[in-house]
Amino acid sequence: MTLSIILLFALIAIVVLVIATGYVKAPPDRAYIISGIRKNPRILIGRAGVKIPFFERVDKLYLGQMTVDIKTEQSVPTNDFINVNVDAVAKVRIGTGTESIQLAAKNFLNKDPEQITMDLQDSLQGNMREIIGTLALKTINTDRDSFSDQVMEKASKDMNKLGIEILSCNIQNVTDENGLISDLGMDNTAKIKKDAAIAKAQADRDVAIAQAEADKAANDARVLAQTEIAEKNNALAIKQAELKREADTAGAIADAAYQIQEQEQQKTIQAATVNAQIAKAEREAELKQKEVLVKQQELAAEIEKKADAEKYQAEKKAEAELVQRQKKAEAAKYEQEREADAKKAQAEAQKYAAEQEAAGIKAKYDAEAAGIAAKGRAEAEAIKAKGLAEAEAMEKKAEAYKKYNGAAMAEMMIKIMPQMAAEIAKPLSQIDKINIYGTGDGAGGASQISGNMPIVMKQVFDTMSEATGVDFTEIMRAGTYDAKVNKNINITGADVSVETK
Image 1: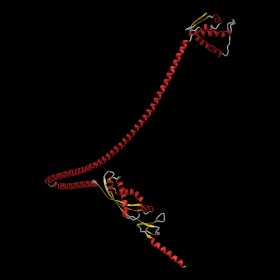
Image 2: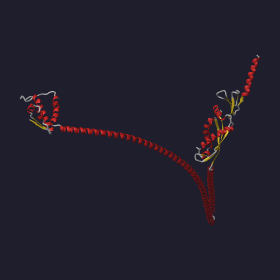
Image 3: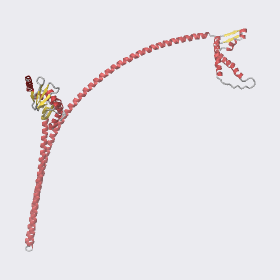
Image 4: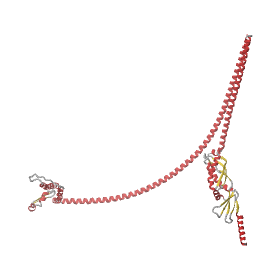
């Protein structure tokens, strides 16, 4: 029983020791990553945990907000080829998701916030430089919210791969090397001054118009009042004249004279009033002319300044276009040189191939020509030998023919006579059926067919005798009894003439 209690207390002591030595508690702004035994490490954020001593370890990852100062160390050309320097500040932190923490742990584990911001600064600067190259100077300076949003959108893709979340990006300052931003401010100042001058001129014009209308109204009221006074005075005088006309004609005449004098005075007053109005209108016209002159001068100054600004902008644009054309020309020249080198190499290769092919063709044709020449020589020798042989044979044949006499020729002709007779009788052998009609005198019928054979043979002998000069009749007689007994033979040939008795 005592041993069991001791073991229990020992076990409890070990557990307490493990808990005391392995107890960790992570604050909200840091992630404690416990790794060692498990395949996936445990992540503690704002809570406590226990690690197994000697088998697991604890690494820390800062999760708080970090400020990254983004500055272009060198001037960056904008979309309109103006070099600018931009100073911005980005607020970032490591993402709270498990995947983001695992990615950040591979890159920023156990690093201070300053070290993390230094690692992120280069990437954010590169993203901002890329965005600057796609925007114009005016857009960067006037629409900074859009500029910062584009920087955040561009940088977020790279930051997400590192487990970093971009909270905000603010553009602090934008400057350029040539003071174009100040020139744009001067342009806006001139525009504001122009608008103020135009507004002042319009206000002065309205005041002058109101003053003229007030003067006109006052003058009309004064003339109307004077007219009413004159009318009333006239009515009073008429009334008085009517009352006194009957009593005193002289008084009436005097009153009439007085009225005439009074009317003359009224005319004088009216003429003076009209002249005053004319003088006032002339002064107002002069004032308006001066105002128009001042306005023309202001407009001329404004147009001149605007022309200078447009001229400067055109010059800068021309310089940028010239640089661009020079770069394009250099690129085109380089491409043409590369293409010329390629064509030259190709031409040399084709030339070498053509030379090799020509050499092969020449060798082939030389061999064929040699073969043809040898064949021709052999054929010529054969033809020559054949011709010599034929000529020798013909010569020998001619010599033999010279030695032949008429008897030999006759013998040759006699040898072919059976063949000639067979050929003559050959048409008769082709006759299938013959109808013979006799005349009854014993001279027609079948006897005529057999009687035609000697006649045909005699015609053949006569033709051969005429062609060869040999009398075949005499030769045939040489075999008769008369020729053998009486020795009466007479053979006449071209070269032979034999007579035996």
